Length: 108
Image (tube, rainbow, N blue to C red; front, side, top):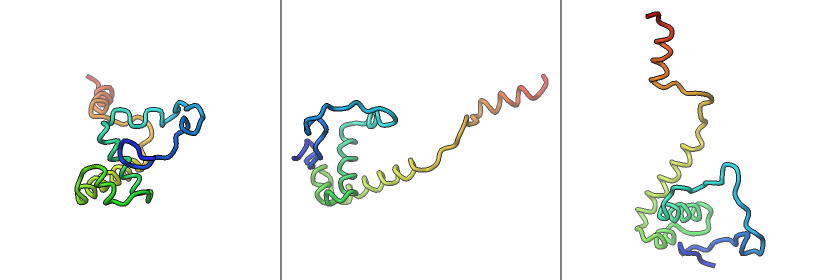
């Protein structure tokens, strides 16, 4: 079954006859704030990376040229790689907090 983006989609819980569960945890607001265009592009790119579509099919469904599709795909993969980098633990020093600690350590 093809969805609005022109791609076949897997059956959801509601289509399989089960009640849809609310997402909890880190995935509860996944995609919130992203435009419909960004979601369509992400969906197309992920389907290509998963082997469900060819890059040509994805470019046609998105209405972009094949070179433009590859630009989008490269940006998406770069974003994934950056998101996988380890984050610093704890409070991060800002210029304001560094200045405040210097002021506390120096008698006036």
